[in-house]
Image 1 (cartoon, rainbow, N blue to C red):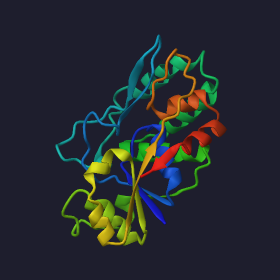
Image 2 (cartoon, rainbow, N blue to C red):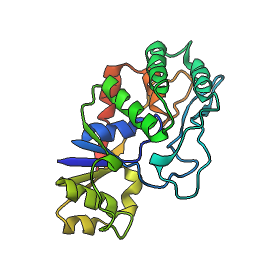
Image 3 (cartoon, rainbow, N blue to C red):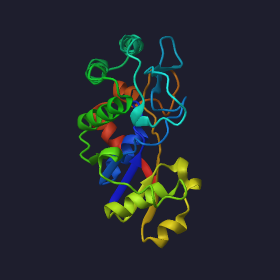
Image 4 (cartoon, rainbow, N blue to C red):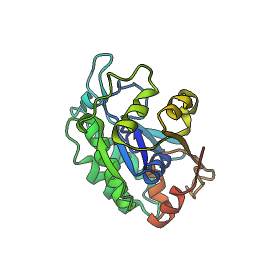
Length: 236
């Protein structure tokens, strides 16, 4: 049984969803420290006239070390309207604009004060749209506490996997040098890394820009095409 654990990102790229589909259970890791200029409150889409831009959820000021689950959205700003306006760049060229814009709208309108809750809800809604049926849980609500066992940062995944009784932990490739495989072997846990190939699709820009938000993929690709793209990966 395979377990995936990742922070809840804001409309993440397609590789994030490929990992969710591959594993049997996926845990939103909402207790790490929020990192500014990461992917928790922003992502990239196309902009009017070409190139890419960030769509951003503004957050209230927070102290250093604040956990992701404690980050509060700054609803004094008209951030939803700004994102809806940014989506207009797709209106005349994206074949699935209407369906995608409606999905994004429905997700953002559910936002309250919690950034983590918004991201988790959005990811789960997109999974529902793509017919991904992986089991989800949220670390801070799962009744798991391995903090007294963790000595190094790469051990969070190890002890959560062990606590839940899974035999395989799967991580994106950018963490490969971060993990000590020998620790996992010692606990009879297989450590895998899923490398998504980011297959090109027609973006109607004259060139392909990989790794944009899943919003961009959904604008130009049918559900069936995206389901095929989700399987474009290799396991190391």
